[in-house]
Length: 291
Ligand SMILES: Nc1nc2c(c(=O)[nH]1)N[C@@H](CN(C=O)c1ccc(C(=O)N[C@@H](CCC(=O)O)C(=O)O)cc1)CN2
Image 1: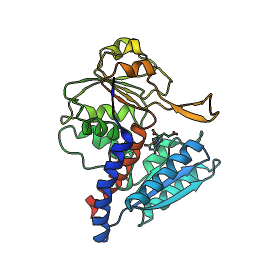
Image 2: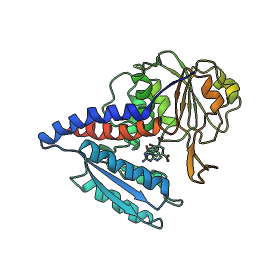
Image 3: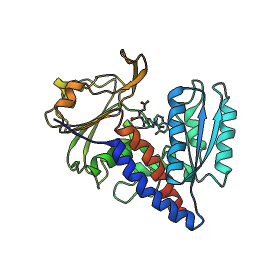
Image 4: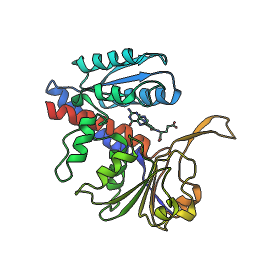
């Protein structure tokens, strides 16, 4: 029976730690403020952004909100980014992804002031992650990969020399997590797989740790998983619950695969709450560095 990598409980612990650091920052007159930029009315994105403001209130961080309609133009979004760059009350902010179709996301992310990039997704901060293999990284890190590694380390999951297979090459999880896991301080060996990967089953079968961020329900099946592997379920697909008729999140790891794991991070309740906690950690660290 797999032990649970409980993201909800771990995130609550982290938030309690951060609350004290926010109090100290506020006492020194350097209180952090998180901004969010949401474009459109996707219910999932709106839920995530509302959650970020709720988290801020919980730990004592003030928050600033820019909401634009789904038909906002590239210029209107860029103007909102400039407002957040210039607002002294906003010490860090995020642009909620994905942006509506037709918007040049990379151009928007490049316009974010790297010193206010609470998501660690600005090219300068991703570049620092590439460059700094040995030394401590003193710039914000992408929240989900940071949260996944923190979740495992706080449960004493040993990653040194372990073979990690990542499913999915997205910019918020798949691509940056390889950079974090292969840093000298972690020392895992990483294989990044995607839709063009030839022998996915064979690669997953030999993995000590599987990070599944494909967004394909049950893509990780029991026959693909080594007994005792660590399974981190990051994938988000939505389906209608047949009993309640409500929409629910389903992950990438099948129920049978979970039975073979030594550790399993559930979805929901695993990586999602850690992503939210790491955003707060980035905001607090950025404020501490500039205090
Ligand atoms: N700018 C960003 N955009 C997006 C990111 C990101 O890190 N930065 N990640 C995701 C969305 N996301 C945060 O923004 C996020 C996803 C999931 C959760 C979460 O707590 N999920 C719950 C389940 C929620 C549900 O039932 O619908 C859980 O896992 O328990 C938080 C944040 C994409 N965009």
